[in-house]
Length: 351
Image (cartoon, rainbow, N blue to C red; front, side, top):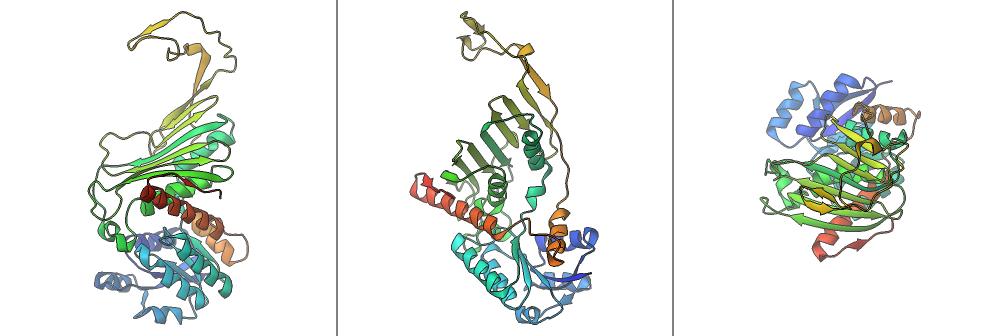
């Protein structure tokens, strides 16, 4: 069975969706698109797709079962709600909306229409993230108490509409949404507290660098940092656990695990150890025989799994992996990040 799909917004991400669905998802066929830009209209016709003159033409097209909304962030909500009301299932690019109140309106429309709505959180299938989770699944480390998740670059500029506040630009709503979604789908229990610092280093209207610290009810501290002015980058992941440490350096999943040896009963003497930093006991190097270095359990996946799940949902073979409840929790966390930065204090959550 082939499910007919239309795309609203055939820009960079919309084209990425089109190309990947065409190559990897035989269950779904993109047959039409709508865009307001002259160059995008030309691209739609070049691809042999039906070009809608207005959004209403799309809404009234009975052939379309699924709509992807891939437009600037501030326009997701009206396109999604109107598509749902016209009897179509909807995927929205992230961030789904600018805040949780807008998302609630889409969810209400979805429930009223009896059609599903989901968000394209493709980075749940990133190899580095899956490898981080696999460390704990295999029991290579346990009891994490600090996890640091960073994406850092030095380009210093936000492309196109992403630099404008009215369009929902900035790094919190761009990369931040991805890393928050990863965090919430890994960390157990409730998110209790958020402290965030946003910076406008080069962008006059929106954040281009930010750091946020999260505290969960089990005591886990989780740090997220997005930087666009970093010329010496830190590891993609740094994970501190009771029994060791893991580092994932980059997107290629280079890194290692260093953990306590199984027989690492160590009696610490009272002698002061002399190091390059001077005399110390607490920061003296650990004897090599008391620890083990392990390779990372690298997992590899494909973002196409997201769309295989969409096809299975359309055919009644599976439930959605990215649910509206999860999307709402992400947006409530984003709300808390902005609130914390604006108020200059931490924000209590409990969700």
